[in-house]
Length: 307
Image (cartoon, rainbow, N blue to C red; front, side, top):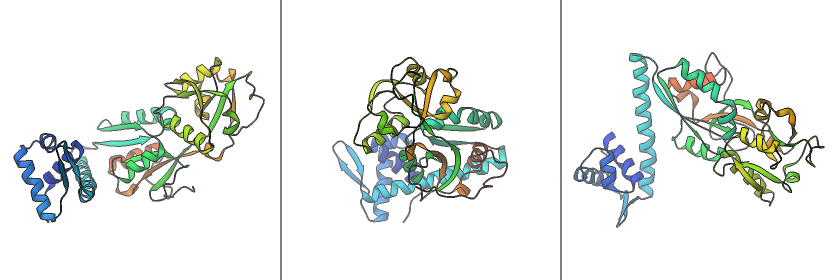
C-alpha cells in the first residue's frame, strides 16, 4: 500500500465535494494529476474507492472508511505541527469546540473571552449543536472537545463535569400554573409556549421530550435568545423552558414565576467530552483546564456519566 498525505487530502476533498474536478481544485492539483493519484490509490488497495456517475462521484463503503481514516490522520498531522510549533513560537492553534444552547448562552461567553485574552495565539471555532450531534462529531474527529448534557449516552468517550444546568419552567406571576412549586413537563404541554429558533439545540431537545410523551409543543412564537424569550414570557406570550442560570441572570426575574421541572431529564449536568483528553493538543488541554477552573490538567479522574 503506497500513498502520501497529498493523496489522503485529495481523496477527502473529492469525497466531500462529490466531484473529482472540484476536489482537484481544492487540492491545488490538475485534473489529470488528481485522477492519476486516485487511480493509483485504488490500484494500490485493490478495491474501488469511488462510484463514478454522470453527476459526480460518491465514495464506496471502502471509500467511506478511507475518508474517515484520512480525516483522522490529517488531523493528527495538523496537531503534530501545532504542538511542535508551540516549542518554537509559543502556544498556537485552533480548537474546535461544539456545545449545546445552554453552554453557549449561559456559561461560555465570559470563560472563553478570558481564555482568548490570556492566550492570544489560540483561536476557537465554536458551534452550537444538540448533544447527540456533538457526540457524533467528537467520535468521528470533526470536533476536538464537546460540551453535552448527561442525558445522552457518552459511555464510549471520556467525560469530565463542567457545570450543573437544571431546566425550569417560566411564566407570568398570574399564570394558572404559577401556584405550583414543581411541575412535570407533561402538565405544561396543555398551554402555549415561547420557544427558541427551530434549529437551536434547546428547541430540538424539548421537541424530543414532548414526542416521547406522544405530544407536541404549542409554540406561538420563537425568540433568538433566552433573554428574548424571558421578555416575551414576562408580557404574557406563553410559557418558556430555560436554564435556571438564565433566570438568575435576567434583571426582571422578580416579575416572573420560575417553577422547577421534576422530569429527570431536566435535572441536567453539562459534561466536557473527548475521545481521550490526554491525546488532545497542549493548547486544547489548556482550554479544558480553564473551563474546569483547574491549575493542573485532570486533577479530577475521568469518568463516564450514568445514563
